[in-house]
Image (tube, rainbow, N blue to C red; front, side, top):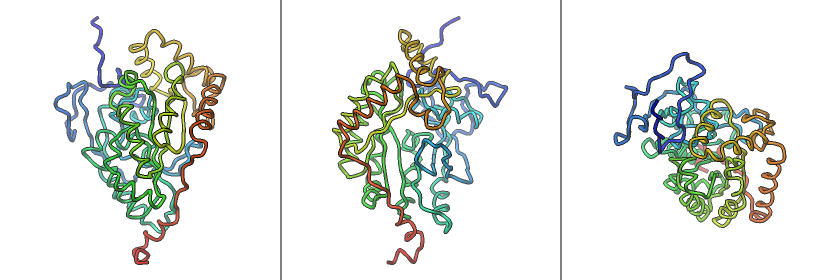
Length: 356
């Protein structure tokens, strides 16, 4: 049997079958695709599929995420991060968590309208909304659809607090809105850093901004007085855990005001996808990396336990946590993110209130 070629430009190399279907989908482009990158082969081409949600805000039920609501304009993510926990949501739409997650992007065109309808309700209580939480709101699709920008315009119109996490320099396109929100303490931005090794990033997160671009983005946001947190995520034992201090220092030197991290966890189909990727790209250290992950999650690649799953347990997890604490002490001792302004929204929700 001829060995299947490696799909450069994609993270996942396989399409695990959806647990909700008994059939396997073929790889032909769907007729209802909105647009495609024609220059790419069928294996690499991205399809944008329109959806029509009735609600856009999702209640955050995780005890590990300090937010009550999240908003995701896109389902699926072209960035192709092979470790992404959000891959497991794609089978609910009838697609695979593997290549489908990167190639079939569901677009919520009416997200901004739905958001405004919620914020206008008199029963709505202002609380920071996490713009992301599942897939990156500044993934390549945003260049065309501009849904994230439309949502930011709504947040500014109603002076409502918003938190953003991204690994794409496209966020700099919206500096005008971010500056305005920051001036009234209405926005926090987290820039995700995974590695300073560009060759590793190219395989681990093939369609994300380069490491250099991310650091420049962090610096540009900080220079405009937009609060920025550096999120080292995920830390993968045996792969990037030796970079914690260098990444933290690089972020601090460019103006990051705080440091966060998460430990990798390979729930559901992500374990199969990650192991396949690891053995194809780094076969000499695959077992070491997988065993390191297991040692942080009680012998498993996955972890669902609240308050433990994000940072793990055991000697390796403790060592990683100690490095984070050292980095915070050394580089972030006198820095912190400003509190959110939760009072302006009430005044701007009332048209009469805007007169005063």
